Image 1 (cartoon, rainbow, N blue to C red):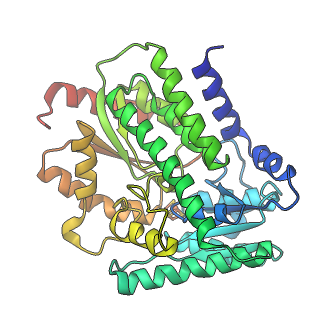
Image 2: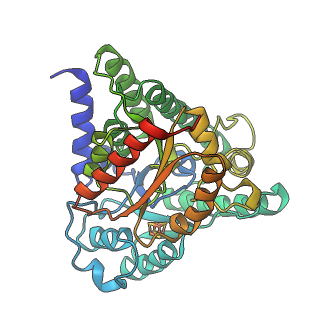
Length: 390
Ligand code: SF4
């Protein structure tokens, strides 16, 4: 087995494992260790890491999990991730987690945090709010207060406060992880045939359950190993995939898009790994610096409240231009308000700039790939035949 296959197979095993064995094994090495889960989209994982705990990304049950109990808690006309996440919890698969963070992204996740408190009274649960005002003295103060509350809670849990030095050390660890993921994304944009998105996706998913230091090393090892293997280059259309920041598409759907003739050269999967766009200073007041990075140097996708309408879509256009993309595929979960409400505005911005796009919806357990493959294939063909996008 070559090294790329070995790395990808390991990531696939982590992806398939709904028992979170890697988390259980990490905890088993030291009884003081705890694992804190977080839902999509963004939480400052640095604070959890600084406590000596493992942040664990929970992205629903995927297409391998049958949802039975979880359906009883929600109406049918919402997305699937809250139901499959409840199913994970109610069937004991998340017992290895000592707490859960529910970041502010939509009402569904907020309601899920309340349900979690009722259903799992022995566990730490926090609805983690983020600012919608980007002035340091207003939104920044609020956000620092939120982070301080989380820091205090985690400090109480481990029996001693988390120091600035510990957080700064963790900021440095995550700076390195973000740098590795940026290298991965830049490499894929340059040579998407060498780093297929189905593999890049699995690598990112591995980062949801592995300690960040281990994940960083794995990403860099993949980059070295995949570069050694020359893979066939196809005349595919280069596209940005957007809208998939919370409930995840099935892996087969990502593969179908690639097989239809598209190279994904940017996306918004697991934005927690790329939410902060550059290094956070690791030698100053850590909460101040995390706040400034969030307010002023973070990804402006549909997952983030945009204060000014003029800015809407500019980040997406920059993704298209900087990655040399020829079009955009809007792929959002059914009933996902944040993604679907933003979509028409983003489409307007693209239309004004003559950037082609297509759009569809999915659920994490979507099984019918043929229509999506046909749609993405037709889109790729139309780009290759008729597009005048730069
Ligand atoms: S998929 Fe969309 S609507 Fe559903 S929980 Fe996530 S952000 Fe909210």
